[in-house]
Image 1: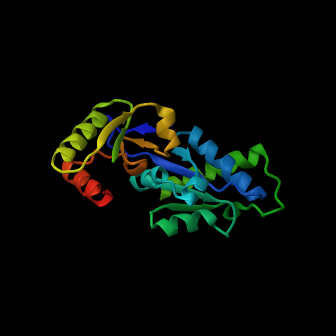
Image 2 (image 1 turned 135 degrees about the vertical axis):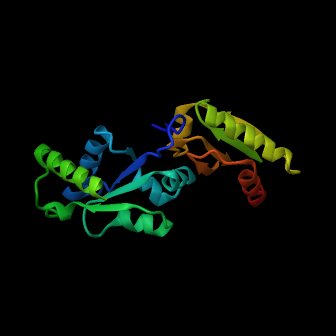
Image 3 (image 1 turned 90 degrees about the vertical axis):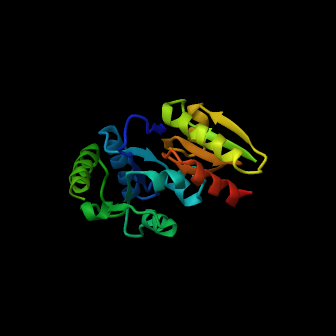
Length: 124
Length: 79
């Protein structure tokens, strides 16, 4: 949902998950949804950023932080943000003990990964 | 040229609209100013933070109350 900046001078953080075909993309997407539920940021569309509609790009420029969660080291999300030259924080699911194409993504793993991400985000 | 002010009608959205109208008066451009308050329409433009300003359907700014001079620059670049 669009965030009104009235009454607050703290810009919202935006969450972007790479939701690719592999298990790692599935984990990235689910972990981002968990972070959004926890109020860490507002989830928005990474694919739309890649396509470049102006509203998404301008929102990313105005955000209080762009949290980009990629599935694997191919790092498509990172490349999209680098192409636009917009600052972002980057997280890759394979850095969290998940093997691409191998690890089964369970609700427990999603919860554990989301928790690890909240700690990492708090540190940055 | 169509200038759209995207926002639900809060004070910052109204300020952006006022600034846009003032900016327009300072130019010789022919343009209409339209308020977009429907959240679905705002979201369909990809705007995650209001107020936002769009020119001819292209979002030029989001989450900021641009001042008159900033809007004039955008208008002149877009003509």
